[in-house]
Length: 196
Image 1 (cartoon, rainbow, N blue to C red):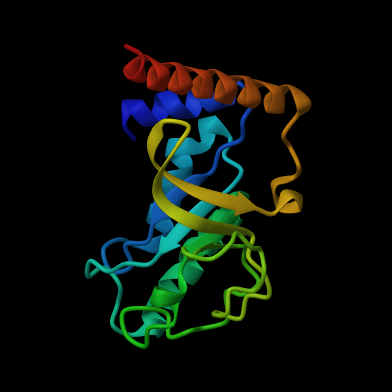
Image 2: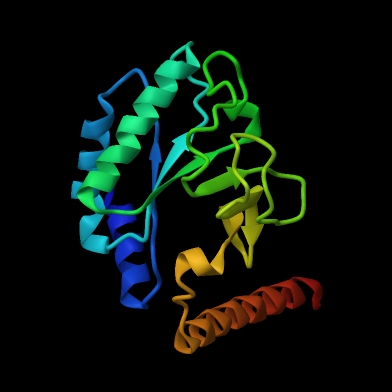
């Protein structure tokens, strides 16, 4: 883990924001249990809400046979279960339904939380239309973008019940204050460039 990641995680924890961990699934590169244990060892000090396993490899790490990818993912998620931490699947239709180097639209993970990457549609927690999931837990609806002057971010929505509705009024007020300050700076900068 980089020092920047440690700093950002600690900053979130310092203001009471929850964090989650995003882990890439290197199916044919490492044993699934080793990856999960290493992730928990690295991040447990930050008390993440969940470990999300990214299943959308297009770089040659996925097995050609979806059954092997499913077996790897099953063992990986079971290790998180054994360690007593929450976990879920991050994926997208384009990869999950592929008959080779994907999941072949397997449905045995439908009981796991899904964070679905599907751009170009309104944010929704409705069924994603693949993998047997009846609903999304999270929806990444906009990819790399800029928000309030901060670039290289993705925009997501999550189920409040699953998150535990853990955002306090103080946290909401803090976020609104920071956003208002950023908007004010952006307006002042825009006006400064237009005034003689």
